Image 1 (cartoon, rainbow, N blue to C red):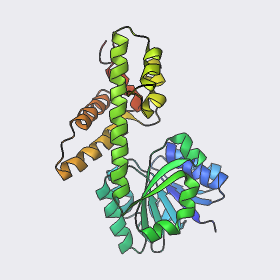
Image 2: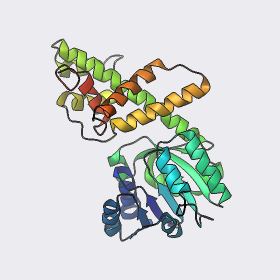
Image 3: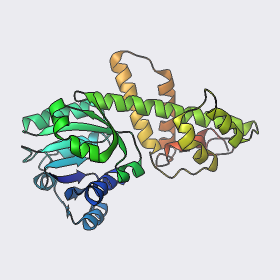
Image 4: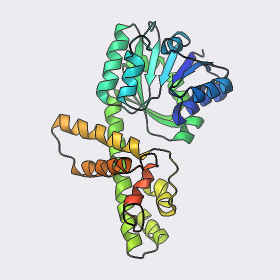
Length: 297
């Protein structure tokens, strides 16, 4: 049976997840909410849904509320905001929180949801905008097994691959590792191609050789052309890369580990943000390493 679904956060990912669930899977997307009222209104019109002015209205309008917000502060605002929040009237509802956040933020919402009579899952995503629209997300789920099983249908509709990582917080930890390694690979590729450019080597040749050797990576496939062509249309922003590498750094500090490569990568993405490049795609880190570009001109 199709459930009524609402979305909080309808940027690039959330809007396309909503489109897929309603237009392709037949779910009833009843309500949307975003601090960008224009974006929420346009999506609501497209899907014949309600564009809510209050978060409590979102909860009232749906059985399952999917949140896709930017960071821990935004998460706390929608769940714990004074006077209006998603936990008002939340008894019997389910929240699936799909942002990349700290494990502590997910755990706090989980505990508050239980106290309000709601069920809470985390659904960390390791995919891009096109995957959201096509229902091909890679989802890492954290939360109670029975709640995961209960909502398996809608999670399957959103994803091509799905993995239950354990109790609440474990999906966030796993996602932090995914993005930490991805960001490190991206920074390493940018340095390799930047140095190759400085040496006057043919960059297409270098990429082909990388692909056949230990220098190969998924990032080589997705980002190398963009680095060479300076095409940094944003799919995953440098600002978000900095945030996610920071989450990994916080986990390492908690466990008493030293991760110098992650620290160096985070410093590069922090530098991009500080120098006004934070809205570029993560491939824009090449602007810091290629000769004659932003940092080396």
